[in-house]
Every structure is written in structure tokens, then in C-alpha cells.
Image 1 (cartoon, rainbow over the protein chains, first blue to last red):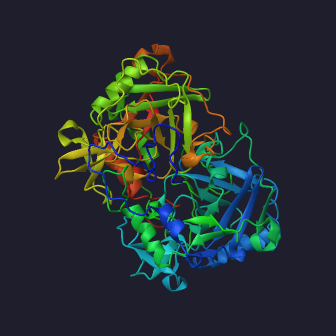
Image 2: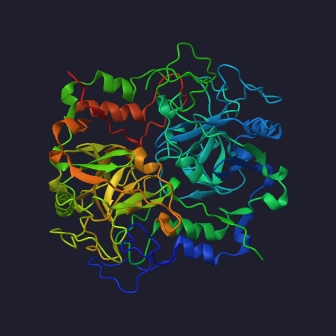
Image 3: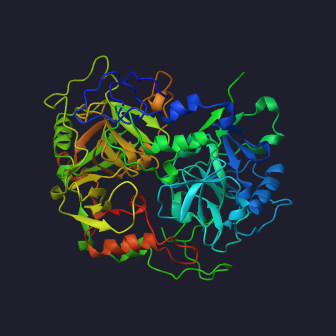
Amino acid sequence: MSQTHPFRALPLSVLAISLASLAHAADLPVKPSVADLVKQSKPSDWRPLDPNNTLYMELPTGRVVIELAPEFAPQNIANIKTMVKEQYFDGLAILRSQDNYVAQWGDPNAETTPKSLGSAKAKVVGEFTVPMANDKHFVRQADLDGYAPQIGHSNGFPVGRDPKAKTTWLAHCYGTVGVGRDNATDSGNGAELYAITGHAPRHLDRNITAVGRVVSGMPLLSVLPRGSENMGFYGAKDTRLPIKSVRLEADVPEAERSHLEVMRSDAPIYKDVVDAARNRGGPWNKFTPHYVELCNAPMPVREHPKE
Amino acid sequence: MSQTHPFRALPLSVLAISLASLAHAADLPVKPSVADLVKQSKPSDWRPLDPNNTLYMELPTGRVVIELAPEFAPQNIANIKTMVKEQYFDGLAILRSQDNYVAQWGDPNAETTPKSLGSAKAKVVGEFTVPMANDKHFVRQADLDGYAPQIGHSNGFPVGRDPKAKTTWLAHCYGTVGVGRDNATDSGNGAELYAITGHAPRHLDRNITAVGRVVSGMPLLSVLPRGSENMGFYGAKDTRLPIKSVRLEADVPEAERSHLEVMRSDAPIYKDVVDAARNRGGPWNKFTPHYVELCNAPMPVREHPKE
């Protein structure tokens, strides 16, 4: 990510390196970038994904890896894991791709000849927020936020919380995965899930159950053709991408696993990572807002380095 | 947008209408939605795009319509219009698609056998901000923002401004179009342009010249396969989408025009539109943050209604 690219213009890179700058405005001091910090990190700054809370959604185009956050939606996640164990999602499809919003998947025949939910529940209580006490890993991000009294990260997930109400919730950023529902708060059950593919729709926070985030494979969802029907649903004119299978990582043979790890958001280095995004330096940047919005704070993921 | 969709779950729609709600949490009062307001609007609430500041980028997959905002980048936009008039972009290509960030287009051979810029300038001063006095149409949005002392809309464009420095600038939201540059502030010239296809990278504000926004055709850019090289640039392994042509709307025969109009952001109705996004009501919403971030404030665009 830090190499100079052959193309003339490197307009948007905050990582671009140039030995001599012709800038008219003063350059900002060179500071370690997020990429620098990732390079400098120690093995203990990372944690592997929990195989019992990681889903592999296998599409014809590749694997989407979703990490679940059971502290934030225990009942919905238990129901999803029941469905995954019973291979409910195998052979279903992506149902919806709405530009600058979501991709959503589930049973295309839910309205006519629905697939049996097996031992999973048809209704699960909405877990739009959970008690703050559920979350042992919260590290506050100091930047102001219009959608939540406090923001921060917990185990690599972006979260909001309300110390007065003593509640916390997963924030809807790019890649956040949640449980589709109808008007009733318990009308979702995890059989229909979505991932955010556009600008963070934070107004969904506290309105719907978020269960985790896509840690790898977002482009497989974000490039899906937008559906031709209302709200990006696929209709007769569209071809739906089938889901080959959804498996719990723990049920996948070791040799076929992705071996990803996420930076520990409660490790000291993560403070520096957020700072690097907040105070961008180097020859390209001429101005820094000294601010980073929750959904622009990096949440580094990498493959576990080979010994 | 306000019909009930045949699928069981309507999880993310703020427009879904249901006659009876089974919600456990109290429903929020029904308020006019953005779609309702668009329906109720008068013809005078809209303005047509200015044919002299509207670009049609014709791709093999369809037309991308870009509205330029000359108050915010007069010199860069003049240069772009020179290139467009001289058909500089015809036959060039999309060079880059980086997930959750940008699509960027220009000359694939810029480093080796660059296409002549014709009468256009090779270097144009960076217009990262302009004097506040340039902008006659600013209407402030009351919501707080971490990236700018003040935010609002001007002629349908999202803008930031700093009343102390007396400057204003186009904000980088989904769809914002800008001028790629290298480290030097005057190293851009408009021959390489980008459109934001991901979560708003507002740290680019005041660091690069934004020239306008995509008002139609974003999905043609947002679904482009992500490039396999650094920063999403396309390389030997990828196929670049060619640009058939870029034309000024004024130079396109009337019968081939798109006839789009944008809601006037200085019409009273626009205040209601932002309010509708800020205070979402109706049976689906259980919680409202009474807040809407700049890049989540709707900027309605429609085809001019046929008489």
C-alpha cells in the first residue's frame, strides 16, 4: 500500500511517498501512517477471529468472511448459528443490492414456498441495544458524533453507547451486518441478513439488530449489480447470485480456513492507528481536520503472518 | 419507492407503509417522508441542470451525469470544459476502482505516451477552498459536523465552510467528483477525475479540488470491479472500462438529453426534506437520533416531469 504507483497521479493516497514536494502549501509533518503502524505492530496487537463466531459465506465469486459479535446480539446470533449448523442458507441467494446502501440475502421464495427454518426460531427479540455491561472491551474514541452520546470500538467493532441509558450497540458502518426485519421489533430472525455497502446509514443504529461485520470479501457484495426493483430488490429482470453455503469457521477443516486476525482495539497501538487517521501527515496532505468520524476509523484486518 | 415490496422483510426501508403494526416498542409518529415531500413539491422547488455545467460521460454501460459547481472551482472547471470541448476524454478509460473509496478515470498511457491536452493547461492551481463570497446559495444545515465549522447545501451540493477564514468548499460525500493530483497542489488539471463510491472520505475536504457531483448513473461507477493493484488501480490482470465520450450537455442535441432537475436547496421545502431525514417517523422506526449527517442529507434529483 505504500509503494509509489506507476500512474502519474496518486491523487487520493495518504500513503503516497515522494522525495521532493513541489507543493505551494506547506506540507504537513510526516507521521506514521496506518500502514506504517500495521508494519510496526507486534503479534500481541492482533487477535485471531473466533472460529465459533465467524461465518464463511461462499459465493460463486469467492468467500465473504463475517465476524459475529455475540455480546451485542446474543439471541439473534444463536438463531443464526442454528440455521448455519443446519445449512439453512445453502442454495439461497442475494436478494437485494441497493446503491449506496445494502446487499441483502435470504430465501427468494420466502413469500410463496419458504424453506423450513429447521430448529431455528421464526421470531427473535430485537436486540437493537444491549446493556453496557455486556461489553467488556469498549475503548472510547474521543471524536464527537451526532448519532450517539459516546462512540468507540469493542473487539474491532465500531460501537455507540449511551451512558445514561447504560446501553451499547453496534454502529452501522460500511460492512456492518444486521438482521432484516419488518415493522415489528421481533419480526427478524436472522434468515434474512444485510451488509452495508454504502455510506454509513447510522440512523439504523438502535432501530435494528446488528450482529457483526464483514472482515473480508466486501467487494464481492459491493459490486453486485443493483436490483431493478424497489429498494434494489432483484426481480424478474435480474439474475440473483446464489449462495453456495454458509459455514461456521469452526466447522471448516483447518486447511480451508482463512486465518484472519483483527487488530485489538483495546491494545495501545490502536490509539495510534485512530490518531493516524485523525491527524494525517506527509507530503500529500495540506490540511488536517484533526478529527476522524467513527466509520472512517480504520479497523485493520490481515492474514495471520506465516512463520 | 413507497409501495410495499412483495418480499416478506422490508428491513431497511424508511418508506415502507403498513396499516397495522405489531411493534413491541412504540412506533414513532408518521411524518412526511422524503418521498412524500418530493411528491408534494411544486415545480418551482426544482431547477433544471445548467446545460453549460453538466457533463455526460458515456460508458458502454450507460450515461453518468455530472453536475459541475463552477462557484467552487472556476479554474479547474474551465480547464475540464476545454478538454471536454476538444473531446480529450473520448477513448480514455476508468483507471481505478478502490473498494469503499473511489472510481477514477483518465489516460491509461499518461506515463508513457500521454494524449495531448490540446489547449488545456497542464497545471491548474488547486481550488481546495474558495472565498465564501463566491457562494450565493448557501443554506446552513444545523447538525454538528466534525470536519467543518459549518455545513450546508448550495445549489444542491453539500458544502463545508469556515466563517473565520471566510472560505467554503464542496464536501466529499458519495458521488462527489474531484480532480486527482500528485503532491503539489497545482499538479492536477482535470485530466484525471474521480468520483467517491464509498463512505464519505471527508478528510479529503480542503485537500483536493472537488468540482461537482454525479447526479445520475452512480451505479455504473460503484459496481465496477475493484482493481487488482495498489489503491484499486487496474493493471495487467484487469480489463479497463473504456470511456466512449464526455460531452457538455449544451453540446448534446435536445432529443438526447437527460432532462434532470435537482431540488433547490434554498427552497423552503428543502428544510423539510432534511428534517424528514433527521426525524424519521412511521411504523418502522423505533428510535430517531434527531440528527442527520451532511452526507446523509438527501439531495433529490428527478427527471423533469413530462407535461
